[in-house]
Length: 212
Image 1 (cartoon, rainbow, N blue to C red):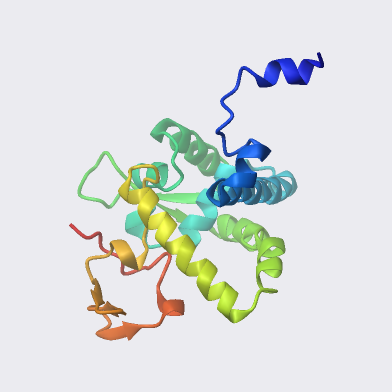
Image 2 (cartoon, one colour):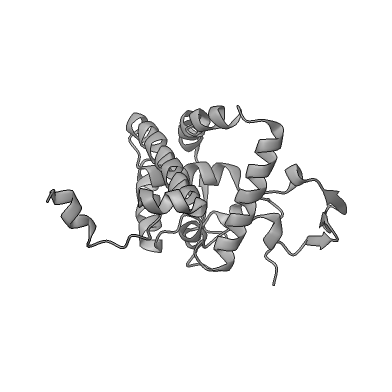
């Protein structure tokens, strides 16, 4: 009997990575597809990392700092944002600081904590790396508007559900925001005081406040 046939018996057949399972369960196909897409991000990040002599997580931290409010740019939040430990973030920050890519701001009332901003050199690195996902975006741009809206709506709800179930630490979608309200079949933002079209639902809202 071939080795692969013998070893297969040791694994659960109902796995999203089992092609036989995928054939009878579209959810398994979708999950397997998402895993493939996640590999694309890893490859694209590593490609940029080689050019600027940084690790993927260091690049992600720099890009996050460049586009988000200062109150989110601290070790505790960054650890939640990227689903890693505080020591992992602290090590990354230590390297970025040593290379002169960031500036620590200790103006917080809590003398033990600090927020992180980019230095001029850090901004230069971001200008070289922020577009790492463009090859993927180029492919997504090829979908029709209807397909894009449907895909975005599904992703938004999936992210919200993963957060509600404790699998994803951080999300800033409208669905989890205290300003969001569902009126009949309409999405409504009480902060903006307006009805939201499906394409106006945000995935990463700067005004997000968690619903209690």
